[in-house]
Image (cartoon, rainbow, N blue to C red; front, side):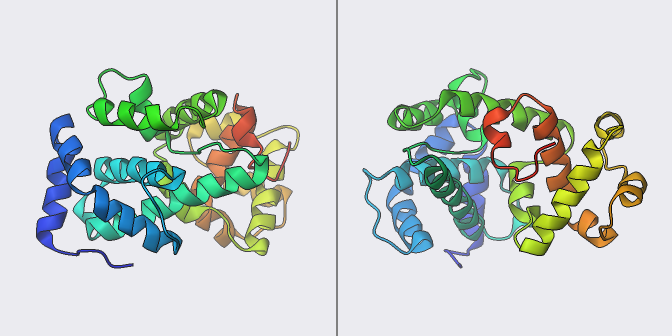
Length: 240
């Protein structure tokens, strides 16, 4: 999806990331645009009272904070982030049947980090969504985000490298099985901050290409399964 792809728009987004006032002004000025963009992303009519709109506001805030020119035009990037966060939301609803919102730790960070430059905006948004958000899941997301960051992995990375095809998901399950087969390789993974590929290949018949393609997902899944993230672990099909 192409959205207002001008250098002026990209520069405006970069400026919005510099301080809280700029970000608040940016979101306020672009509210109607965000509403229309979300409707196009979801191919449905969205109003300001819908949960999807609240999620989109948080997604655009996240997009501003993570945007740089290497990601292309800002609004195309923002549309991708919006779609990713909305998909998270719908998947969560499908799994639980409840109105819970799944967002990135960067967005929830404003609830607890008083030094966060976007805290004012995030607090306003979180007040609107507080009745829907699962506090346990929020805490897990925040903790996992910090853990992944220490491995150089972001939630944006995971959106790109998560296995989509059945064959890829099966291959990833085999890799995770190899990691947790006694003696487990998780300590070695954590120490080296990379996958022990040779040992994995010696334990399971899986292609090196699949491992390389989904490396960040596999590391993240292993950390989730071995860490204190019971809610998030429900999304990982393999159980050690």
